[in-house]
Each structure stands twice: as C-alpha cells, then as structure tokens.
Image (tube, one colour):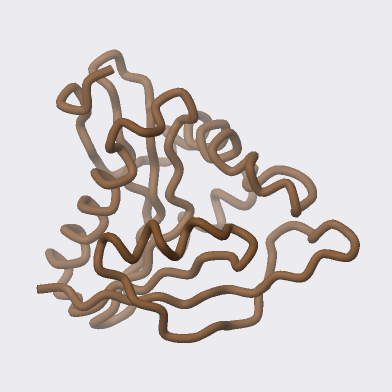
Length: 161
C-alpha cells in the first residue's frame, strides 16, 4: 500500500461495521484491559458526541481511523487506530495531521489528547508531533482493567498555529 493511495474523509454511520474491527485490531496491544476496545453500542455512543475521520484506500478498505471532537477553542482526538498490517507507513502521522486540520477548520486553538500510562511509548510518539504533557487524570475505562492493574491518563496538548 502507498500512503498516496489513501483518501481521508469523515465517517458515516455506514462505516461503523468497518471501523469496529479496525479499532479493535489496532488496540489489541492493550492486553491490560478486558474485552474489545469498541463494539456497535460504544461506537454509536461515541459518534453522538464527535466524529471519526477515516483513511480509505483506493480499494475502499478502511485502513485507519481517529475520533475527533470539538469543544469550543479546543479539539480532542483519540482512538487513533491504524490497521496493524499498515503500521509503520506514516498513516498515524497522516491521521494526526487530518485531525489537526479538522480542528483548525473548526476554529480551534488547541488540541488535547489523553494517553494511557501503560502505553509507555505513546507520550514520546506524540512529543515528536509537538504535544506536551500537561498533567495526569484518573482513567475511566470503557471496559474493565484486568485484576491488579493500575492505570491513569497522561494529558497532552498542542497549540495549533
């Protein structure tokens, strides 16, 4: 796959059946949580408060997704998911750029994200794109943590220019 063969667009509810397995495959690394990252009910609820941007290959296959939500002058993105077979090709960066451009178009001045403390490489990943840590917050998981596991959210932000 070539990243130039990818089109990014706003997802519709009809995309939900393709977004669910994409997100779950990308988040399988979160083995400290029980169950899957999302399902039809959780995705529908998420889509009530924000939108998903999806990366679609020329073939029509969705290969990446990111949740975006506008909150006044701040945007929030989360659930950045890249098909595991397509990771390492620059799709994560492409989706971050798309989310930031989405927020700029909505008049946002800032972008906020939250990463889980147990995803050790993520803060450094986002730092390379200009995000800085602003604190920590309690983690309110959508699915249970495995017994004995402790986790919190690391809040990060970036000023849009």
